[in-house]
Every structure is written in C-alpha cells, then in structure tokens.
Amino acid sequence: MRIDKYLWSVRFYKTRTIATDEIKKNRVSIGENTVKSSKEVKAGDIIKIRKNQIDYKIKVIDIPKSRVGAKLVALYVVDMTEKDQYEILQMRKSSQEYYRQKGVGRPTKKDRRDMDDYSADGSTEDMDGDDWDAFFKENPESED
Image 1 (tube, rainbow, N blue to C red):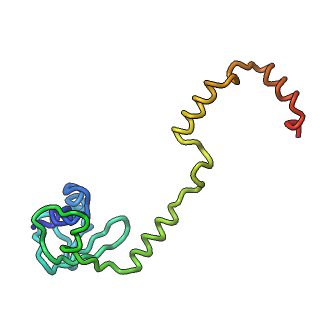
Image 2: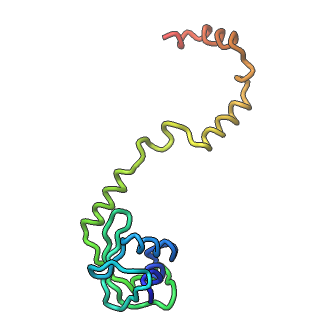
Image 3: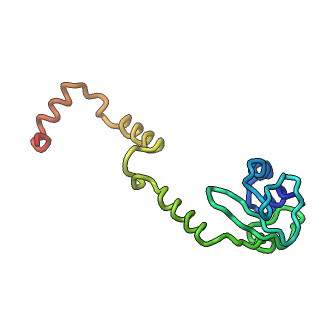
C-alpha cells in the first residue's frame, strides 16, 4: 500500500491529500530516508512523522484493506513515540490556554447579539443626553 494511503487509512491524517502534501514537504520518512507518496509500505517498517511540531514514530504491524475505525487502528500500528514528545505536546496545549477566563473580557459575537437584543428591548435608548445627566445626578452613589 502507498504510504500516503496508509497514513490516511490508519487515521494519522484526515484526508489523503493532506497526507500527500506532508510527504512532499519531507515531513514523513521511513527509517532515515524521506519518501515520496508512491513509496510502498510493508509490515515492520518504522515511519517517522513530523506533525504539530512533534516527531511521531510508528511501526507498521499490518496493512489494512481500507480506512479503519479509530478503535481498530491499534491492530495496524504501534506507537513508538518517545514520552518527552508527548510531554512537549502537553506543555504546548497548556500554554495555549486563553489569556482570559471564559466569559471575561471582550464579548463574543453571541454575547454582542444578546446585549444588542437586551438594549433594544430596554428603554435606555430613548434617553437623550439631558436624561442621562439627570439620572446620574440623582444617584448619590455614582459621585465617588
């Protein structure tokens, strides 16, 4: 089976086209040699893949006839990736947490629409500048 088709069939890439593009960018190798998309994969081959800034290393156990379900991938591939690569991946995921907590900071598109609906229903749009001045002068707490 071709390597691009194999990587797609064991669900390493979402589409065969993406697998082919990654192979063309020299991010996939068998052993120490970079390969072309047409390279045939055999049982026992060790494939090295550079994906998401992580170096994955997988061993081919068997060749599937077609794309397999996620639960069946273990029948065809053994993951030989070093633990430190997964630790790097975990560290990157944790460092990519958002700079703010969810619900704090700049409103999302849905939040903005909800606020627009709320302000359209309320009577605050009908107030002109004089009404606002009177509103704030009447509230002694706002003069801090």
